[in-house]
Every structure is written in structure tokens, then in C-alpha cells.
Length: 130
Image (tube, rainbow, N blue to C red):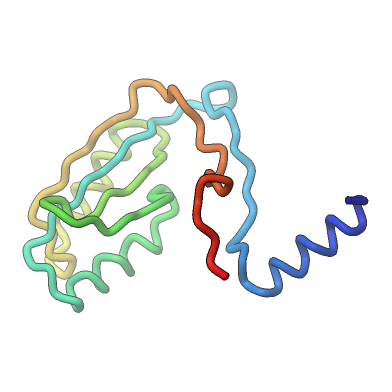
């Protein structure tokens, strides 16, 4: 496929809503000091209103880069990047202290080493929707 045809195909798929966004993965270890961590959130109640309040709060905090609602004992898991552990802890304390968010418990799990990078979805292994 030519570069022009490839660009047109990408543009058509993007306009059809198949792509959310594009981003670049950087090797932060070579660029800046930082702390990566997974943060687990346990809510006091699992009502739709409580979940919306919590989700809206995290939307406004860029250091919480990804947030997944889970089944099981943990309600949410978020992948975070902070300049240092103290900044991460302070943010978690601030969230925990906000009575509107209904957070019962927060568990911080710092990343020791990134042994595999996310390289995209394994599309060749997934069943495509017609």
C-alpha cells in the first residue's frame, strides 16, 4: 500500500471513530525522574452516583493516566506517573480525605521495573466484529 493510500485509510478509520487517539511511548528513565505506580481504589459504596463522582475526579488529574473499573474486591485500578513518591502519596491522601469521593481505602503499588512495554492490542489474535 502506498504512503498516500495508507494515510487515506488511517484518516477514514479515524473519522469513523475506530481510533481514540495517537500517542508516543517515551523512555522516561532516560528523560526525567519519576515514579510509576498502580493505585487500587476501594469505594465505600458502589452506587452509580458514587462511581460517577470518583471517575469525574480522576478525569481532572493528568498523573492518573489510565483508570479501569474492575470486578472483584477492588473497584478501580489506575496507572499513574508522578514526579516522586511523595507527590503520589500526597495526591492519594488528598483523594482519600475528600468525603465526596467515598473512598474507603487506597493501595499504592509502585512499579519496580517495566519488563514489557505495551505495544498495542494483539489484533491478529482477536475475533473481528462483522
